[in-house]
Length: 129
Ligand code: HEC
Ligand code: HEC
Ligand code: HEC
Image 1 (cartoon, rainbow, N blue to C red):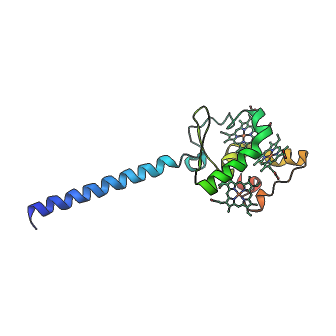
Image 2: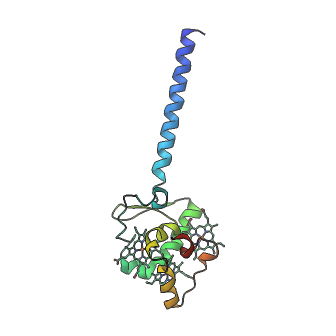
Image 3: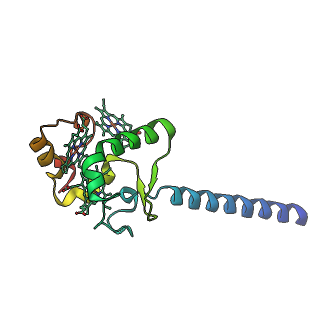
């Protein structure tokens, strides 16, 4: 093999490696949901994605919007005003609220609401330990 060919091949190999590394890094940084990162994620779990008052009144709209964005628009990352990133998924809610597996249920039972979400989505009673 000619020397120039060798140099060209090693050049191409280096380029491919570089592209591969860049692609993998990009992929990692777009998947910033706590469900991906696991419990060690640098997320303040003492705060909801919005104020308690807002969540009490509007969590259904939040979930509805998340579903639309995620499924229809492919926009899966929610950024809070204080700069925290969350995966737009029911699992994100359950991830934080898992310490009380009846969190959603008790309140809904009390308010006599029956979301049909758990017909398809993993129920918090099943997903948490
Ligand atoms: C008929 C079955 C079905 C029902 C009922 C249902 N979903 Fe979904 N949902 C899906 C499917 C399928 C997806 C797509 C999953 C994906 O893209 O990974 C999805 C995706 C979502 C997502 C975005 C991604 C994710 O993994 O969470 C949200 C948020 C969501 N649904 C919320 C809800 C809420 C809130 C309810 C109840 C009001 C509900 N869904 C009821 C089937 C259902
Ligand atoms: C990063 C952790 C975290 C995530 C993610 C999260 N929550 Fe919360 N949530 C909390 C904490 C902590 C509180 C209690 C806030 C307080 O007392 O000020 C709370 C409060 C709430 C409340 C009010 C409860 C009450 O007792 O009045 C609702 C409703 C709620 N969250 C629903 C949701 C839903 C729905 C999602 C997903 C769209 C979600 N949360 C995602 C941590 C989280
Ligand atoms: C503090 C009480 C409370 C908590 C905690 C709570 N919810 Fe709700 N939720 C309600 C009330 C009340 C409604 C009905 C509001 C309305 O219809 O305007 C509701 C409605 C919903 C709806 C819309 C249902 C429908 O049929 O339109 C969804 C979806 C929902 N909640 C998901 C959740 C999830 C997921 C959690 C747990 C992460 C949760 N909620 C925790 C009180 C609560």
